[in-house]
Amino acid sequence: MSGLVVNRLSVSHGAISALRDVSFTVEPGQLAAVIGSNGAGKTTLLRTLSGLKDASSGNAEWNGREMLGAKPDVLVRRGISHVSEGKSVIPELTVKENLVLGGIWRANKSDTNAAIAEVVELFPRLGERMGQDADTLSGGERQMLAIGRALVSRPKLLLLDEPSLGLAPLVIEQIFETIDKLRHKLGLTVVLVEQNAMSALEIADTGVIINLGEVVASGKASDLINDPALRAAYLGY
Amino acid sequence: MQKVIETVLIGLSTGSIYALMSLAIVLVWRSTRVVNFAQAGQAMLSTYIGYEIATRSEVFWLGLVFAIAAGALIGAGVDYFFMRVLFKHATTGPAAVVAPVIATLGLLGLIRSAVGLIWGGDLRSIPAPVSRDGYTIGDTTLPFSPLNTLIIVSVCLVLIAISILFTRTNLGLALRASAYAPEIAQLAGIKTAQTRTIGWAIAGGVGGIAGMLITSYNFLSPNSLDLLLVFGFIAAVIGGLESMVGSVVGALILGVGLTFILNYVGTSLTFISGFLVLIVVLLVKPEGILGSRKGRRA
Image 1 (spheres, each protein chain N blue to C red):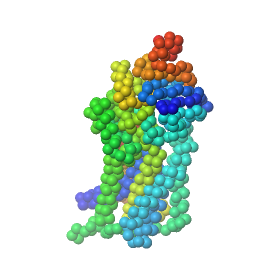
Image 2: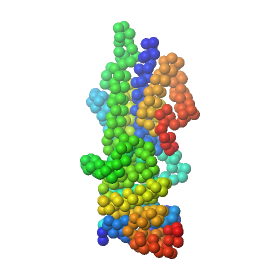
Image 3: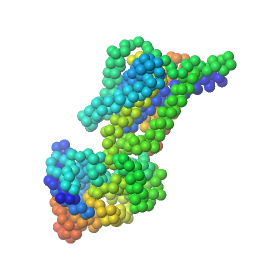
Image 4: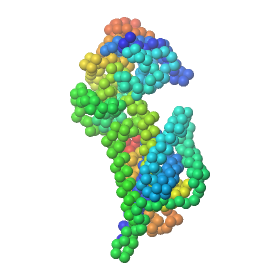
């Protein structure tokens, strides 16, 4: 089956079990929001999918091909890009260097340059700041740069870990709008991990709610938003 | 006045060699957070290999090429066979910080003994590629020779090559990214373990150049590079351990400073002065003269 299929995935940190039997699917071109409170296991899920962490059991396939057991550098080459938590840019490098980094695995430099030009078109503000060190950027700009870096690798599956973390409400709104626009424009499949449940579900096609390492609910995002019990228990109002 | 100028020139030449060693230490520190005390042993072994080639072929430059290649191979080997294994088994707890440093000290002893077994403890010398006799102006012979000039010029070339590598190439970007943020580098598709091994290889090659240059000026023995290690390390600390430019500036300051003490005070104080500088820098400016502007992690 094409798309992302996660099947009975379990992950542990030593003796502590972080994820238990997590299963969900994301159809190609769809956006799945993974919602849950702090410590629910959302970040562990993404780290496992991108090859940073080993799973203890279960499997995960992207377009019919097993992802688990492959290292991140291999998965990037298969079109899977992970933007890790907390504005994942390298502050000591310039904006341009951070973007080049996204395509560094390509043998062909002109492909990278073309991809960077596309990203700059999407985020003109980055274009104005190409020569600056990334640590001179605002929080929102850094998040744009982190996503931009991932896009330079021209991914098919984008794993986004809490892009709203530490940003002002107005900026968060912009970030979510941008993600929504991007994925339609580029036809991306997205797994968006968020604590900011409502904003994430509003742009999502499907939602997966995780609590204490287990999936407690999943389905169409609109159904989840309208389920009074879920709203009260997990969506915070 | 003439003596002052001569002292500065000799100091710059000595400092240039310290610069290569401190650069090798900084290169490894930046990419692995390990102060590699085995660097002196690696450089010494590569210099012995360079010495064999240079004396047999009677071509210094061929010896230098082999010393660089040997240094790079040894450096890569140390990372691949020792450091990777070590990091796999000692990643957490207090041992994680100390273990690699102790391991590099152990490795230094091991290489030194192996070299002693193969080549013995005799002092050996490499025929210098250019004259060691000082330049003469009129009737006076300066203590500064064509060899000193060659040393300064080659060190400048190495520094330019390394800075081009680091700032203009994808490999350089990969090396920097892996040093600053290994996880982001990995997510960007960089094979960080391999990149780190390349970093060790570059450092090893630079160490090989330092060994050959100082030996063309001095003698080679299983202990002859120890002082170079000490001064290279002090220079790296003066520069902040993190910055390549800082380590070079630190090395030049140290080279000139120590040569002044040697020429004006006496040999007996040179060694102690090096340590005094280290202590003063650690007390007054522990981040180094050009220590990272953002005071980045320890």
